[in-house]
Image 1 (cartoon, rainbow, N blue to C red):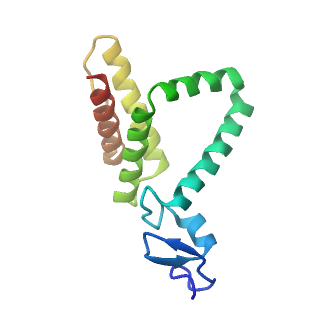
Image 2 (image 1 turned 90 degrees about the vertical axis):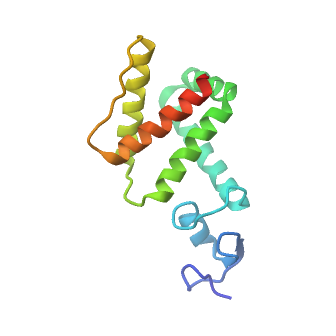
Length: 149
């Protein structure tokens, strides 16, 4: 049986999103992007683990081990917080195909500036002209505020 995504190669992996078998190449290239994988998909989980290992290795090479250990400690102290951030960003990307990495960076910067002003005792929410980045900013701030309360 051919892969239902590319219709070229033999489908060998069962895809819970497509309810049939797809080829490993389509699974690897399109999971979480074009294929709306459930969060408990074994291939999605394995792919994220490999991706995270690559990122970790690159960060250690770039920043050094001390900086990496600090960030790891922060993550280990509040994994639910970071999981909620990741889920929110994934949902935004899935709901809006026009969203770009530039929008994400801008939204995160706006959220960071807003939080910095709050630390100084000033209530000011940074909002830009980009509606996508504003949506990201609001999502991030909602998550931060829910964990601070």
